[in-house]
Image 1 (cartoon, one colour):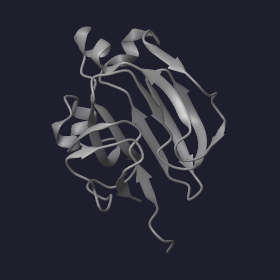
Image 2 (cartoon, one colour):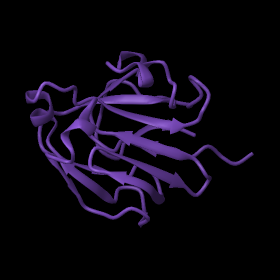
Image 3 (spheres, helix red, strand yellow):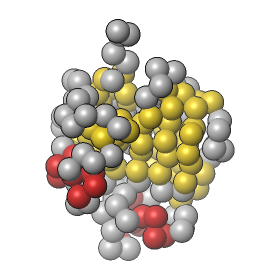
Amino acid sequence: MSEPSAVLAPVAGTVLALSDVPDPVFAQQIVGSGIAIDPDRSEQTVVAPADGRLLKLHPHAFVLLTAAGKGLLVHLGIDTVQLDGAGFELLVAEGDEVTTGTPIVRWDPSAIEAGGRSPIVPIVVMDSAPDSVGGAASGSVRVGDEIFTV
């Protein structure tokens, strides 16, 4: 068994339990275990939470495949797929190898909220058992703070 690896905060804000996310797919951990961050309401650059390869990259979400073979989903806001990329600026390309802290996408959570959508950011280990992440953070986090281990 390999050592647990740290997953770092891709955005600054306040940590929430997935059960507090206003979307049943995340709240019931159907996609996997993790946490969510209620982001600070200012323009932010979302960064890679770990080293890996960008398996999927959409303006509102990305999946990072770590060296350990874990898929990390970072979803920027709830129902933001409906925006067709408006309000998001991609800074990398699908398939890119990135290191922890690499800028991935720029967005403004306050603009998402002003448009009537939740800006909450779930960070999920795909296909993991419910409540299976270790050492989940709480309270306020800055970009790059450890939020859990996988």
